[in-house]
Structure formats: structure tokens, C-alpha cells
Length: 307
Image (tube, helix red, strand yellow):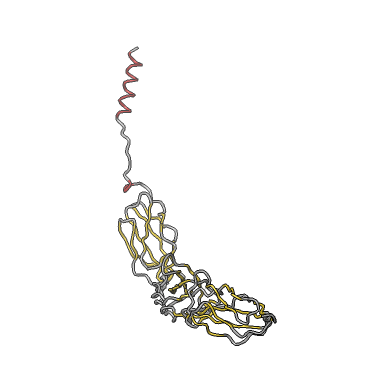
């Protein structure tokens, strides 16, 4: 009974005499693992960080390939696990890291980065100008920008308010022509871009105001048997013409020379011969005229012999 107890007690004493030894990271009894290097694949300003990680290393050496020397050279050696690279010109740069401790060293794989500087934004183009500021057709154009250029972006705004809308985006063409345009006030601005960055917008153009020159609506006042009539017209909704022109025809095909009615909205015609008389009127603003109205026909009858 006593012998088994003694044997158990001896075994416990033997176990308690052992201690578990944990090697600190800096004293791992084998070489470190190959470092894992983190590096951006591209950069635009020549400044970028390099990071690396591994286990069991006490020092690191960062190598960069030298194109002039034709081999890798050391650019950092020490305990840190990162390095900021600065001032690199455009080109491709390759790196690897060697991690070491007292038992040996291990190299990472090679990592590369391409530095390509973003082009400087083009200069601001000239202020857009128009070939006409009150009628169509008109062409918006602007002077050239300097620097690397991929496109001009022309924007339009209606009635001097609201949002801008892009109406033109091309590389070589520095103009936009409008053959038709709804009555409104328009202004324009333009910028130059190079695919990466753009200039500021130009100054805003002078207003292009397209008036409502829709044709007026015609009517007449005529008494049967008389040789005179009064032609009247009403301007189109939203228009404000300063001048009207009238033309007359006996067949609706061949028209007499147009008459300037000024700003009047009626005209007396007298000494008219019996038969059909066709009339058309068009509206104008500052010398710019709209289309002729639909024909208005009046049949002049001969006076009665009993009169």
C-alpha cells in the first residue's frame, strides 16, 4: 500500500521540476519566414509607402532595383516594417525585402510599382461668343486652350437660371452651331479636359436671346360691294414684335413686294379690284423676322348696279 503511494508522489515531484520554455519572437531558433510585401501597383505623384510583415525577424533590409547600376541596392536597413518612398519620377520601380535574425535570413518576392504623373490641367478656354445674339442660325465658338487636351465641354443654361446642360463634348471642334432654337434666352460656358483633370469653366457668354417670331393670326373687315377692306392681325402668344410686314397676291402664288406696317396691327387697303385677294403677315424683332402667316383670302365683289 505504501509503495504505490510513494511512486505516485515521486512522479508528481518529477513533473513539477520541468518548466515550459516559450521562445520570444526575437529569439526563435530558426530563420524568419519570407516577408509579405505590400506595395501599390500604380502611383501618380512619386510618393508611396511600402509595408512588409513576417514572423521571427529582428532586422530588415529593403532593396530597390537601380536601372543605372543594373542590380538591386539597399535603401533601408533596420527594425521597422515600413518605408515611405518620395520624389520618384515617372517609371517602373521594383523592390524586395530581406528579413533576418541570428539564425538566418529570408527574402520576399519582388514587387513593382508604375509611377505615371497625372497631366497638368489645361488652361481655361476663352469666353464663348456667338455669331448672332438674337436669331438663328447662330454659332457658339471659343478660343483654344493650352496643355494636354482630350476634349472641350460646352454647357448651356436657359433664362440665366437653373442647371447647366452639356451640349457639346469634342476634342478638335471649338464651335457649336444651332440652326433652330426655341424662343428663350441662352448663355454658355466651356472648359477643357485631358482625361484626368479639367480646367475651370470659362467666363459666361453674353446672352443669346431668341425671340418668339411665330406668325400672327389674320382677320379682315369687309363689306360686300366695297373696294376696300381692313386687314387685322393678332401677334402669337408670348411674342413681342416691333415690326410687321404684309404681302398681297391675286392668286396666292405670286406675291407683291411686302409692305412695312411698322408696329401697327391693322392695315386699310382701298381701290381693290373685284376678285380674290390673298394676304400674309410676318413678325419681326430688331430686323429678324419669322415666317409668313397662313394666307388670308378676301373675295372683293363688284358694286351693285342698283346702288
